[in-house]
Length: 105
Image 1 (cartoon, rainbow, N blue to C red):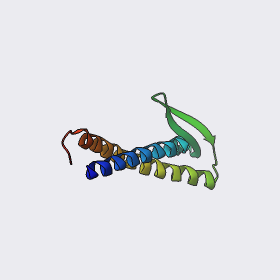
Image 2 (tube, rainbow, N blue to C red):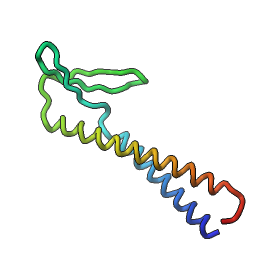
Image 3 (cartoon, helix red, strand yellow):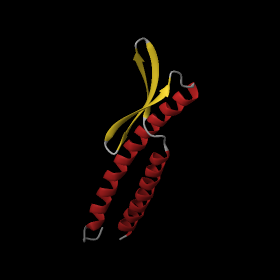
């Protein structure tokens, strides 16, 4: 019984962490900045998906380094959060399966 209560506590912690990661993901700016070379000139576009479709939004010829850095950092954080979310979802499924069993642990 003691082990089951520890597993339940771990399941609750995992669910809370999953919610936090999802909140952090939704707070990040969407998409990423892409530099395109058109007829020898550089242009910046924000690319993202909306309702399953690819969207591209013109941002200008020059984008401040601060903005470039912000989108690069958001891209790295998004990848980190998605990887952590994937691991947490697997852990939650496993813990739910273990706790579903009727035998005492």
